[in-house]
Length: 325
Ligand SMILES: NC(=O)c1ccc[n+]([C@@H]2O[C@H](COP(=O)([O-])OP(=O)(O)OC[C@H]3O[C@@H](n4cnc5c(N)ncnc54)[C@H](O)[C@@H]3O)[C@@H](O)[C@H]2O)c1
Image 1 (cartoon, helix red, strand yellow):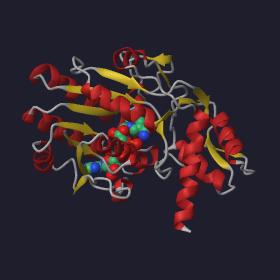
Image 2 (cartoon, protein in one colour):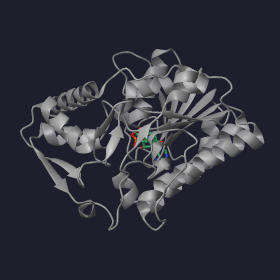
Image 3 (cartoon, protein in one colour):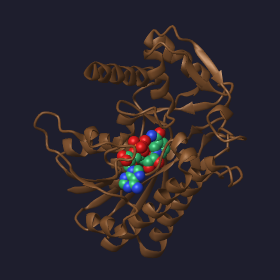
Image 4 (cartoon, helix red, strand yellow):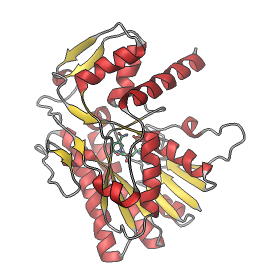
């Protein structure tokens, strides 16, 4: 089969590209390299390479041309990361709203199945342990730009669901919780690669606030097969599935684990949110998924624990430091 992966040169997209190519499929990537890079999908000695189109998902004609050449679409392109959303709010909204609209409409026109990647951010401040797909969203006031990512992704889900209902679009929505692994950059606000980079440099790890925020991390190599299985699963039209880890951890404890695993003497420093984000920034205190729906439907069960995730990110960063030096 031939797949279009928007955002295929990004972190999750590049792992998905390798997975599909290893299964013998062809991959067409549409990416503008804003946070991704063609280097992420360089071929490993002689293996087939994806075809790459340098362009934006906001270019509806280009999206249409790419979509009509393929059998199915994974829509991963998005403006991501708390730093990106805070510093480039308008551009991020444009990508996350107009880009998704263009992809959904093209998939609908060409009758190709679509997987839309959404985010646990849509749950906002809902701190229930074991968030399920039908739980309420609890978002802060719109002028606080940090909510714009959740707002755009929520509208994306509604656009996709409405096309399933009104136009019979074969679309499934994966609501991803914190996804981590080799190749992820810490530059845009992702916590584990940022902590690991600081630890390997022997610097103190920067914990925002008091560090009591709770998250669940899932290895990208557990997430990617789930995305493929969801796209292939019949009878999921218009449905949402949580995809995330099963080991809740406080961010201050995560920092201590990163220091212990990397052997870093740097310690931890607590930094107020205001030092990096807009005044009045509110972080989600507690975000833990219930993935029973994905488990029942596609047998989703993460196999890599948090220590393994941290070790794999540290090994990747060490390897790249060696290559660069
Ligand atoms: N990594 C996570 O923890 C996580 C959690 C929840 C949801 N997600 C979702 O997963 C998807 C992939 O995220 P990721 O972590 O791989 O991030 P990433 O930044 O590595 O990947 C996003 C990719 O989209 C590309 N892109 C951005 N704007 C574009 C545009 N206008 N046109 C074409 N390409 C564009 C970037 O260059 C990049 O390659 C996103 O939709 C994100 O919202 C990720």
